[in-house]
Image (cartoon, rainbow, N blue to C red; front, side, top):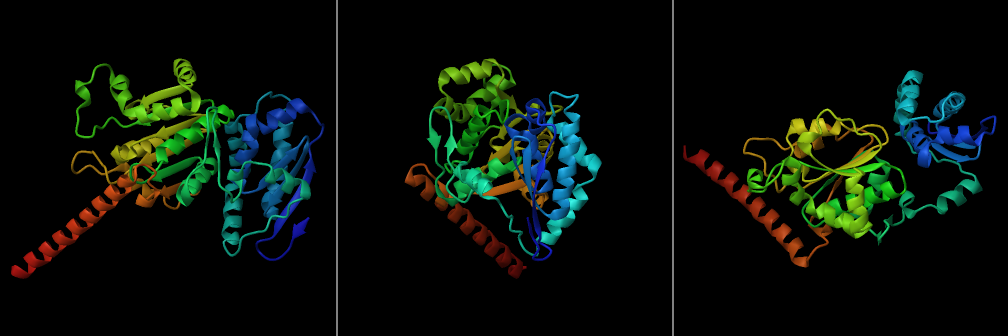
Length: 370
């Protein structure tokens, strides 16, 4: 089946992988279809599977390449019980498909392709969670289902489910951290990841960590209390404590992240406005295969020493055009706490804006007097 309109031609093709071996097929697709999802993200194609039959939809050249890649990977399952995401990554690198995908993506900027789907595909897609469509996403956790409020929160949750690295930037009370924890719990419970990491820079809001008892991890623990509270609400105290004991949930000060590679994990970096430029780069380069990272912060509440640039402000410019990374910006209208919180945020923004204007007037007046 093929739509031959123009440069945005879309091909839908069905293939069968033989022999029909359930063990080999399970190894190919990976846990929770992680290998198929990896191929979809990297190649920009849609892959649907039922048994040993696969339907590929996308740009014709990329679909042909994806078909060849699936056959190659399936041959590898003869001697392998598990196909890891990093093995899929190496196959993609060796096939040299990045340039082909980039060329196809450039051509598609002239118009979005219409993927032609079978009735069975439409039925399967309509039965999935609304997060995969334009409807309102719902985050399902063991203790409760969480429905994001407003367009920004909904797009934020969709971005987290779609991209490996996401940023939530905005004032206090907008739900950026709470929703990140909810998505992390959902991913853990559905076995999309094997653990959750909660990370925070060791910078205090006008206080001194050195006076708190314990090592650095224990000193920083009270600052992560909002994350714990959210976890307790979604998983229950007993399960959270059990996961912490088994290192399924890990608290990691940012300073402890250097040198680590984090695979199959959901990592939340909270209060990221207090990272330096070097720390932000260090954190983002820890991300491994099968991992999702969510970075949250409020650039109006930076506690770094005077003259130190915030890594969160810097990274917005550095990664603005990198595909696979999405920024969601929240404003006072997204605040879901007490109504006064929204008014407080607006008042501070207005006051700071007036202050900048007054300083500008003073500078201009000073220049005229010289």
